[in-house]
Length: 281
Image 1: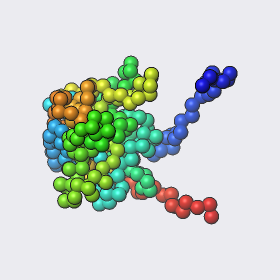
Image 2: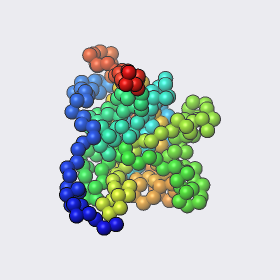
Image 3: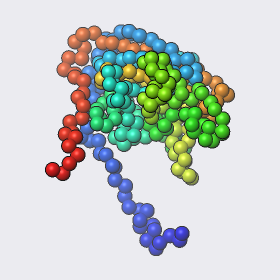
Image 4: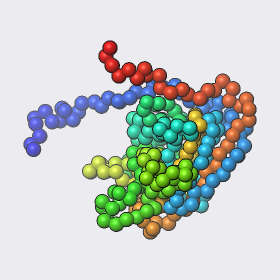
């Protein structure tokens, strides 16, 4: 189709941020950090390569995900510990904060709850910024590798995708059938993953994670959480995923609890206060 005469003028229209976040309540990072300095480790979990595990974090505690042996991407699901219908909402997190999360950003729960579930407190990769390809780290744009897309593209079954890993982990942890656990799996936070969109086609791309042994990202739990984390079969996601070819490493999760009184004045956020009338009346 031939471009109209005013094509350049149409393209030159200035963009508008869809969800200005200036009015969002800012997390009290100084308070969180002071509490973290006094916190002690209460649990440690190892996520084996190409597998997933579940763990709990109570509100007011901290959890750290570490590349314990080398660069390794992880796919993270979050649930409210007693109500699995409330879970992480990657799309709204992306809309409020951007395509990749940074220190001070929050992971938001799905509708109708829409409240902070966790806040990014520390990230040893916060130096990375944006590279020449438009790549950034810790994305909320990728959905998770899954066996259905793999079969669509290759005609083959592969069971160590992050979707399948999370399904198995939740089924085991909750003692539910795989079919029931699968319905709980949702779009993820891709920790340590370096991604973006190509300038030429707009396609989602991945490149080798800049993480190295010892790099970590740490969160403050705003509510009681059930977490499920998969060590992606793509390893550092520099070549391919849904395959046994990439070198993969474990991920280590450490949970820390501050002493009583360390968070005086802090309170866990309530559900969104929209009336839910959905009516003009």
